[in-house]
Length: 307
Image 1: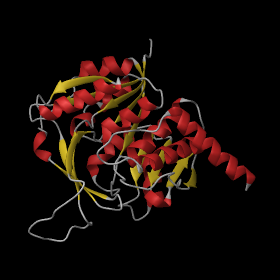
Image 2: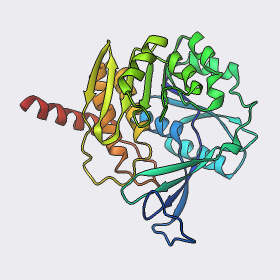
Image 3: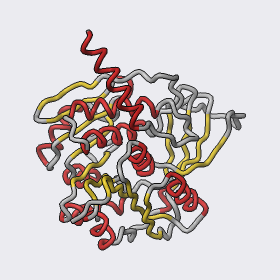
């Protein structure tokens, strides 16, 4: 069967309202005067992964539930303007949205509106099967409806990845995603023992690779039963916002994996893409391109050889 899609992204479409604040945590006050102000734009985790792999030249398609509302039109316009295929299923509760408080140092606090989702929300199984059959790989967001799509994806024979974000290693909600995926990304933020959690994912599921990102401390890669620290990459311009850095890391890693690169080089691709994302203002949705990524990685590898 023809695989016309390199990466099928499921879930994670939505809209963020960006609010720049003078500091985080934000002390209580009756009011604040803020600059550069408040802006709403399309782009949540699935959107960012789709944008990232598309910018790296991979044929990309995004599937999710989206509302018949203004926010939904922003999401549709983002994909249309960037030339990314989108299959949108009506979400009766409306398009997912969040408010991101962004501090001067680029750190962010996200407030997710849970009222948009319903217990009955599902991605149509036939649509999932049809798109999966045409795809080389599927990246699955941990939004509620996507859990029900995992069996159909596995039966279609497509490889899977997921991002557990700030999982604490114990919340059972994340386990179906972790155990069904071939590549698992997560943040080390809430983990007291990242290696233990990563090895447990491998033992209990089918993961070949687990990556725990750790911000300025780089990332930890578990592949072939070997734990490796991946150093952080210094951005070429100042850090302005960390939102989307994990999604960019995942996109860079998947680009490497689908290009046949070994896990350590895939992780280096991810580190470079993640560092680039930190230099993009939160009001924009730009991703590193293929030529820039390969050039930056070649430069880093040349420096490491000479030292």
